[in-house]
Image (cartoon, rainbow, N blue to C red; front, side):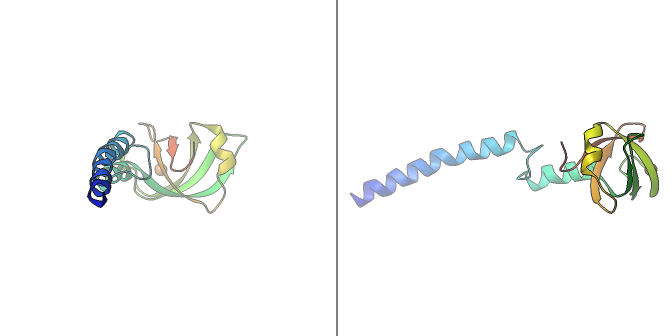
Length: 114
Ligand SMILES: [Cu+2]
């Protein structure tokens, strides 16, 4: 009886594991549980910055950023944001990781914000 139980447990473990792996792979590009390789690829496209101020009237955030993946050197500049609702979630002194459009003038994604 014990042996039967053990083999049942083994079998269910073997069946469940591949399903869990497949789910992780499927969502690796968005989920925090991404594989190290996938996470490195995402990190490479993100720039680091600190919010200096937010101007809701202009729809911009003043961001002091380091060297960006698009080649922009470190500077402080006003960015427009793809989603103005993000401005409500940003505040002075906040460290962010973000991506910009091809021109490097519009923030297209901020890590942790939707
Ligand atoms: Cu810049």
